[in-house]
Image (cartoon, rainbow, N blue to C red; front, side):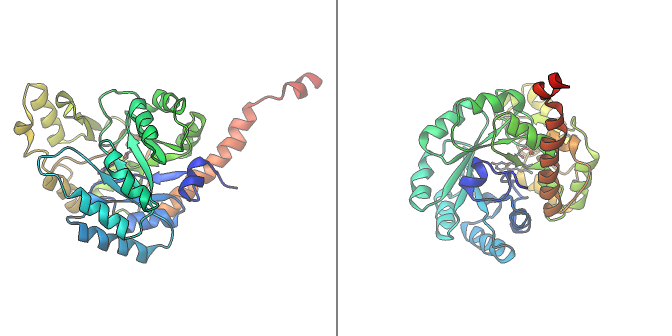
Length: 332
Ligand SMILES: Cc1cc2nc3c(=O)[nH]c(=O)nc-3n(C[C@H](O)[C@H](O)[C@H](O)COP(=O)(O)O)c2cc1C
């Protein structure tokens, strides 16, 4: 048995599961393991310090899998923007066929991707942005609810409402993102009108993700309340692990502080130390509320096959059993 949807069909993957781009986490070993499991993994372009490093990481991933995988290009406003055009060129030259865009309007990047036969899965956090991206011609939508790790936007609409509200207006393949970690989530997403799920946090806690074991153990130990929303007053909200640094950031900004006042606390190098050295209070690190549903550190293969198998059992077992056949009942 298998679960086939518009997403698996259009993006050419076996299972309706994606692993979204993750800064410092979305590297070759994880993405190849996700691909080998039959799901769609994305390398994170900006985790690589230069476009040439991205080319090497793509080559390294290809050494580990011959299944399709994609690259995430996160475009955020920045004082010193990375050379997006050069990263984009590397993606094209390497023959990548699927890109996950996120962070801002994908319009400037679409012609080049489409001219080169690349399918674009655009990640956004509101129905209006999903509708806009669809009208621009992207090939799929990844809709991220308030539960998600990273940037949930400023509307605070959880998936239970966001997904069906988006499904009402989206005709292209759509994966539901934010808070997904098991078969129940996949079945719920399909019931709400999505064609699959995108997961970040769940894939952090897998054997193949190259982050320090302390971080994986913290995710297993953590519960659904273990996150903070930083940058709220700056309207650039990010959901991150609750630790001494994130709580201090919240306190400073809630007290009227400005970005300058927290700049050093949120520095990327400090966050990276968490993943590299396992010092959980070294800086800010991204994680989602789905932490409360994560109790183990499986391989990506075990995780994907468990989610799909249990989803099939849930649909044809527990849910099917709840549906009463009126005629059979009345005949009895
Ligand atoms: C450690 C980490 C880093 C992330 N970095 C990025 C990023 O650079 N670009 C991006 O588009 N999304 C990023 N995300 C968001 C994920 O791609 C995905 O949308 C999100 O994790 C979904 O929510 P979940 O964690 O509840 O599954 C990141 C998530 C995590 C956990």
